Image (cartoon, rainbow, N blue to C red; front, top):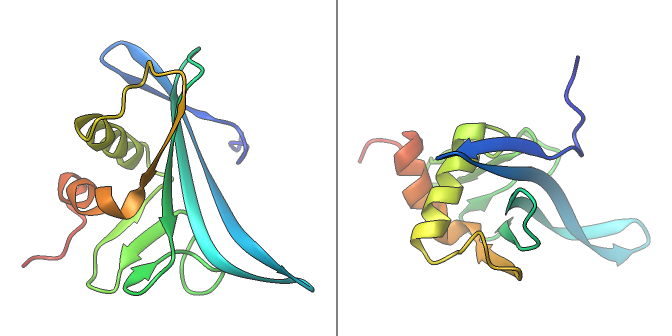
Length: 132
């Protein structure tokens, strides 16, 4: 049975259950046009009100899927590092790095982080950076 795209996935870390999901967004300009591709990974502790939104917005040197040449969930840099945000290991690495940068899963508020500020640390953990 195929997994439903909109259904949150489970991730168990040290006996705690987290839920995570991935979405793709644009800024609508009107007349069917848009700009600003952005991949957003949301992680939350099961039964907690708070959540963490990690955004990977397109920009100079930053690659996000725009329906051309890259698959859903792929984010990378023009220098060659890539992550697949659909992989549970990537979600786990993002969670671990976010916690080291101060995110508290028990906080009832929604927190936001720029995914690019986490990218290098996660890519190193995932072995996704090209050799120096």
